[in-house]
Image (cartoon, rainbow, N blue to C red; front, side, top):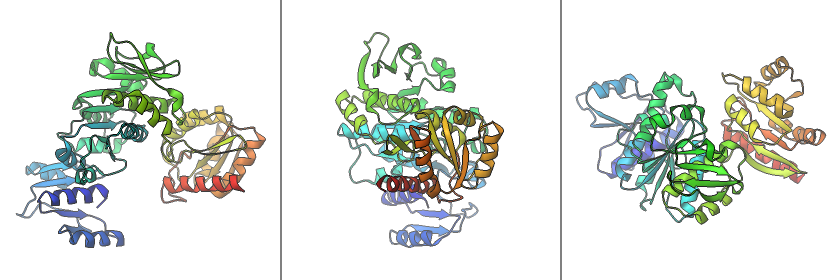
Length: 448
């Protein structure tokens, strides 16, 4: 009964199917949705898990991305020969006449998808971002105006449940261990991601990613590779790289390298965002978009909320919201991406993980650390253990923001960074609400 499930039900209903939507949960919101959908002749069963024991079996099952592919009812459906697909695959079947850019990877998907959609839209295309971002893919299929391009952020769960999805352009942003509780092994997770790229006509890879670099040309001989480090680091003889402050395009072994857009046009900080820029520009150029439209879109791109989002400057200090950094790896990237010295605000609901790299980054860049939320005492112990003592437990964001401004003045820090390395659920419903609270507190502080 999420966004993708409701959109899939509406699309199937429009195409003449008899549709039944089920959700194992129930709530006042779901009951209200049930009534709305009943007026559209869509049956909704709440507090219900389908079984396939009756004689009246479905012809087609659409699976929400959150449902594991190997739950008993889906295993049974496949044994019975009932076609079982995900919502992304369903949307593809109705939109396959339209070219797609399919973007996957462990990290970097959302920024790359947002920036790619912004560039295509600046070039005059009706190019909605969908999938894990923006619209559900089936909402795009339901739209009365057919898109010129579909820009899809596609997770491993969505690839796993797609049998024929084949983008015109496929992008693979990064690859590190993730979702292994669901995919079991790193090889299995890799193979799922690789399926999307194998089905794509043109392929773009992050050549600075250690794992993708390793599989390199042996697995992907025809791909376009990217590197923020310059032409000598380009894998193969075609791709996009940064040199002399420009994104440079080299489309074949014999073509002349062409500067496309100044790297400084992108307002987002960090090498990982320059990498996202390279992949987005590569997709735009392979779609035939000219450099003027690209430059305009990149210059105007505000960044993605809660991902190293610049909130404001106060007396020469930049306040940056990285609330999306909900684990150690993401928070380490956040710290590495900003100028030092930094006043760091961290904490929330702690997650399992290796904090070694994150702690090293704190020692290298943070003038002081302010700790909030339930993780604060444990984080204080970890900092103490590595010999870092310049921390304070301030408990709440409302205490952290004014104190961070005072400390920034004392230490002549360039940046106040919220990069929590934690989930938000101890104090906030989600990371977005946490980031919005930080934003509001910073703006209020600047005005006061």
